[in-house]
Length: 175
Image (cartoon, rainbow, N blue to C red; front, side):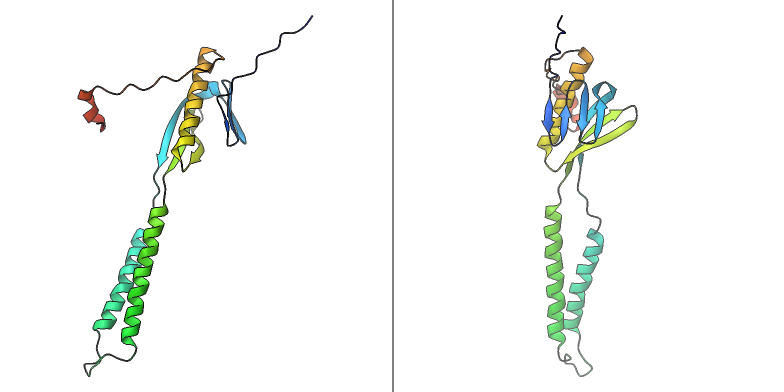
C-alpha cells in the first residue's frame, strides 16, 4: 500500500530571504501563518532631515561673519591687516557648507514598507528604498491570503482596486 504524496506548496515569492506560500510567510528570522494576517498594506516613509535648521543658522552666521569683517574698519578708517582674507574665508566656508547640505538633502530617499496587521499589532517586516520589491512582496502576500482563505493551492490574482467615479475623486485628492 502506497501513501499519496502531497503536491508541493505553491511559492508566491522567494527573494531577499523571504518566502511566501499560502500557509506561511518567512522573513529570514520570523515566520507568520498567513491565516493570522488580518491585512497587508504598502507604506511609504519620507526621508526627513532635522538638522536643517541648525545647519541654516551655521551657514547664515558664517556668511554674516564674513560680511561683518569686510564692512568693519578700524578707528583710522582702514581695515586691519588680514581682515579681507578672513572675511573671504568665512564666506567661502559658508558657501561650502551650503553646497554640502544641498548634496545631503538630494541624497535622502523615501523608504517603502510592507505593513502587516495581525492580532498582535502592526509590523513592518520589509523595507526598501526601491518601491518595486515592496510592491512585489505585497502582491505575493495578497495572493497568499486569498489562496489561504479560499483553500486554493493554485495561484490567485488579487482583485484590482476600482477607481472612484469622477464625481467622488475630488474628495480624496484624485484626478
